Image: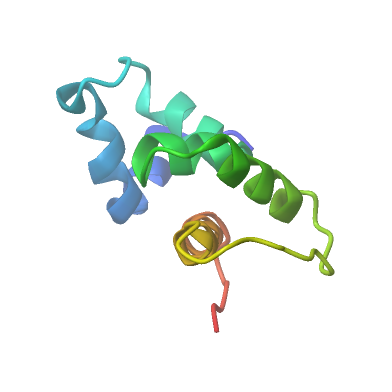
Length: 102
């Protein structure tokens, strides 16, 4: 999906974060290319714009990203399951225009 500058800036919630990305110490890239990279890679988006992921959390996100609705998650308490699932829902809400989370 190719976005021009105007289309990109219409997504104000995301645009503010990506324009400010260099000031946060992240590598400086074109905001549009960063938007496309975040849209296509759930793990990249969460790891760079939500919180740092542990390796097992990356595996959880890859399983979610694979599209399998019936993924079992045998994990102990305090493993960050809710944070990972909330970040996945946030990604879905940002990058799917008419999405409903609930």
